[in-house]
Image (cartoon, rainbow, N blue to C red; front, side, top):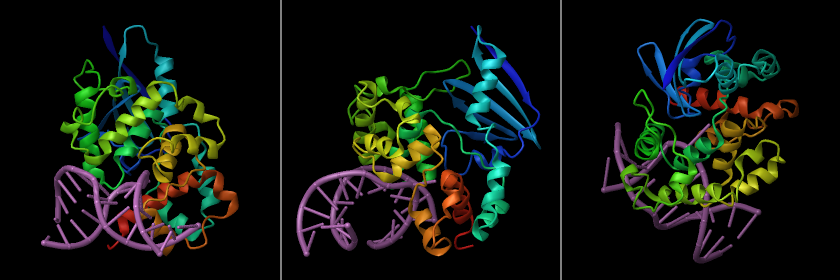
Length: 276
DNA sequence: AGCCAGGACAAGT
DNA sequence: ACTTGTCATGGC
C-alpha cells in the first residue's frame, strides 16, 4: 500500500518553483492552479509555494520514513547550495546581475542522470512544448503507472529492447534510434551514469558522447542537470546568442566552477526578453 | 511555403 | 579543422 507524506519546508531561501520548474531545465512538471505536480525518483510529488515556504505532498510506500523523503527533496531542489554567495560573486558582471534580478530563484535541479540524458537527447533541434509532449508520451507508454495515475520515467532496461517502430507513437522523429541506443548502452552497463558524478569532467563527456545522438551540448546538459556538474556551460542556439551579444569575453575565471548556474540564468533571461 | 526549435552526424572542402 | 545538407515533427 501507499501513503501520502506531507512535508513543510519553512526556509527554502532562494528557491522559487515557478521559475525553476519552467525555465527549460526539466520537462515533466506541470502547474494546476497554485500546485506544481511532478514525478521524481519514481514518486508522485505535489508542491505549493507561498513565499519562502513550500508544502510538499509525496506519494510513498508504506514503509518509507519522512526523513528520507526530506533528504530526497533537499537533494532534488538543491536546497543546500549557497546560492546567495554565488549571486554575490556573479553580481560583478553587469549582464549576470541583470539576469538574476530579472528572475531570481532558479535552482539547478538534481534530476536523475538517465532522465536528464534521455530528455536532452529528445531536446535536440526541437522546441520546449514539443519536447514536453514527447517525454509525456514516453512516460505514459513505457513508464510505471503510479497509485495516483501519473507515470514514472521509464527505466533504460525497459527501452533497451524496443525498436524505433515501437517508439513511433511518441512522434520523436529521428531521435527514436538515439533513445534506444542510449538505453541499450546504459542498460548493459557499458556506460555507468552513477560513475560520472566523480569522473574527470572531460572523461565523463567523452563517455556520454559515444552514445549515438549525443554531442557536446546534450552531454553538457546531462552532466549539469543530471549529475550536478556545475562547471558545465551548455551552448545551444540561445546561449550562442547570449555569448555573441551579451558575453563576448566569456565568464571571469573565478566564476567557472559555477558556470552552469550562470548559464541557466542567462538562458532564461535571453529567452524571455529576446525581441521584446 | 518556408523557417525555426535547448543538435548531431556524415560528407565535403 | 571548419562548413553544409540532412535528419522527423509541429507551430507559426
